[in-house]
Image (cartoon, rainbow, N blue to C red; front, side):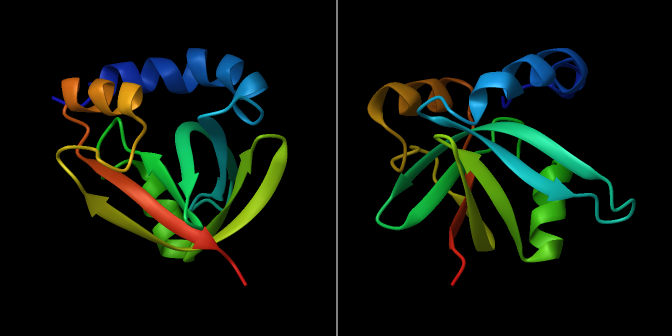
Length: 126
């Protein structure tokens, strides 16, 4: 199922600016800081993110073919604002996990319900 693109467009213009005010500080959320691969424009994309064992994992609730994922993969890294800090991350990889076993239990159930089977995994840059 994954969330529809019409909702993504609404969120980009309405929800994201509001969410962005708290997403960089709230547990389980963050803001991906990235540049457009063609425009070079800076973007701030609110995401669900969880870190464990030195890896940061970001739920791809709109699927793996969204622009911000293409941007960070083309750049080979990105910055993530989370819990009031900015972390530089490298080598983003899109991974598939139908069960969302990487996510905390409550989040896992939501991701399974919306069939969000993909996530980005990256590690702190050296």
